[in-house]
Image (cartoon, rainbow over all chains, first blue to last red; front, top):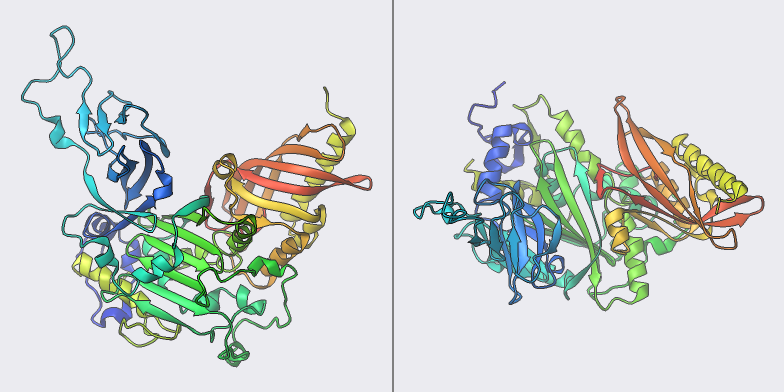
Length: 415
Length: 158
């Protein structure tokens, strides 16, 4: 068995194999933070609704790097590292707030102040006190200022990148996936609720799970058992050209519904006749008007949004060490929602998240892989559903988007 | 004014029965402790303070609670685990009239298959209660968790 200090090598089979060390190796994890999250990607940071007013700030992460997102007096959104130039303390210690009239954020440790763009503006006692102490004129603490991020917004979402060479956000997401974000977030979203789900697994296991349309109706049997959906529902899978981003979707019940496709394969839907006593749990209206009832979308490496009927769930995937991930769920609606629409969204949000009737299994299944592969670092998983490519397809019995993820990951990691 | 001892006793008994049914895996009896229609939700102190309507669970009928139990029993897949609820003394509000409200602090420990026992959630039940014969029933139970962080999954109700 190879040790973690040796250089890891991807299996010769290419994208149809995923070696298990990718989830376990601390050195691989460290390089991911550096090359992916802090590399030439767009990280989802927050919603514009998190910094609605001039002077507002919101704290988050790029990988594990702490970040402050702000809105300045002109309404522009900025982001910079949440680290004071002096001793490295957090500049903002609260999850959100407002900088107040002066528009400055002040580190609590020695009161060094920053403007809302992250520029160091004032140093307490820089010239000393009564002619004593202070910094020499040659000192240039500004050279140690927190790193600034490029910021772009899209449909009320705020993204940040640490690298100049990252293509503009819309080019980065690409023409296949971009319209699918606009489809869901047609208007500026408002926040209906938020929480963090802690996952006992590597961040990539959750990201693969989001992209894996193959598992959906096999692991999650709620819709099938209550007679609400079948795998044969019309739908499809869209993978961006570089493999990094994806969309999977399914349409309302159509003629292709085949009642026996599970039974034929002896899968877990033996409880025929199970029916919801409260069908309003899954009652939605077609807000978009295109017949799509479920859409799951991801933007590499930290963003996903799920849309099921009238529930819109934005997810930020935050790595917290090789074996832990925080998933920040933000459920959104729109400012002009009627009370009935809010009630619909409230009920439908029962389907996702840690208590999600449809998808609660996702919280645990990554941990099953993390534990199962603990000592299988020379073994690989087999990702061959739908062949070996990353092309879009009209079936969800396909792992093209998972292979796409690894194609993008390997390109960033140089593996 | 001192709380009505009989009311306090009735609510204490209802809360104890609620905790016992969840902890003893008598989930089918859990919706019966609510009137119909009712409200049951799990949310965080942050969402509650900001009046954000969406949390981890939201149900507005007894039927929806029964659907959740049916789903847990027959559809959802999760590792075997149990809870142990420890409840504090209820704080009664209201005058004992038609609308009675109360808050009860709780701690829920989660016991995993491998024996790990950890604090899974702490918080308070914010309740509206209705008289049902000699006893009380929940008209509304908002489970306000102190933390916004939930570990892995919330299968069994809190």
